[in-house]
Amino acid sequence: MNTAALKDTARLLYLAETEKREVERITKDYPELTVEEAYAIQEELIQLKLWDGNSIIGPKMGLTSRAKMKQMNVEEPIYGYIFEDMIVPNGGSIRMNELIHPKVEAEIAFVLGEDIEGPGVTKEQVLEAVAELIPVLEVIDSRYENFSFTLPDVIADNASSSRVVLGEKVKKPDDFKLDEARVSLMINGEVKERGTGAAVVGHPANSAAMLANMLSRKKQKLAAGSIILTGGVTGAVMLQPGDRVSAQVEGLGDVSFSVKP
Ligand code: 0L1
Ligand code: MG
Picture 1: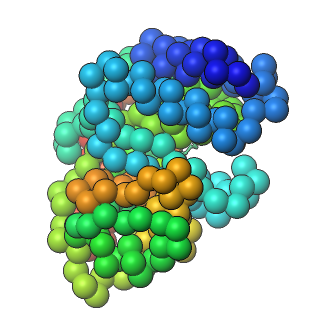
Picture 2: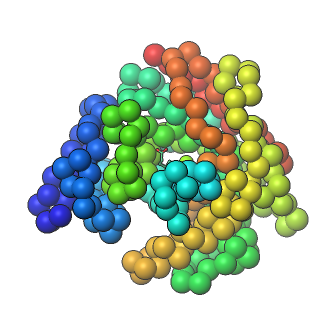
């Protein structure tokens, strides 16, 4: 894909999000689109958001469950970025009429106390660097028709990022076994999904280590203070207007929001 097409594609995805309009997956027109080109489109999309006055809260990992990776036939997860205008207060609400076909999943986020720079970052190094943990509800909203995409499509679309509800930050206890932490996702008081931290590539810290190592290929690092969404612990559930959504993360607490029409 040449530079002009790359910029046009980023603009198409940007407008699809801002105008809440689903579009055909871009690999219909560009079947040979590579993962590298897809990240180049994502970077253009991020630039458009930054030029709009938006700012980055931190990165997110996507496709972190073995099931999703197998389904997409990938060896490693993908990443995208969470922006300031995606943040919804804990206990607040999202509006269905601002979104296309949102789904929600429960996650665990890290707040870094120090920089992490790859390559070769390990789970143990990540755990040393993490200062705080946050229970999170992430709303994903693919800009593609019927949530239907290939790997390059979803990378270009900023890993379907849409809204994020952050719970209270908790100082990371030294002996906290994140892979064993039980997480449940409830809609209207009914448990819809359950998982443990191990659902995220074995341990959420593995996910952040993979992210640091992927970013190091671009000479980038994870900066102290940034918030990292490590990936879905539960499956993603379709949202409906009127839904009251909450997640419980064992040892960390609750997070919730509601869905307005
Ligand atoms: O946060 C995620 O895991 C979403 C990654 C993109 C795949 C999807 O939209 O389901
Ligand atoms: Mg997610």
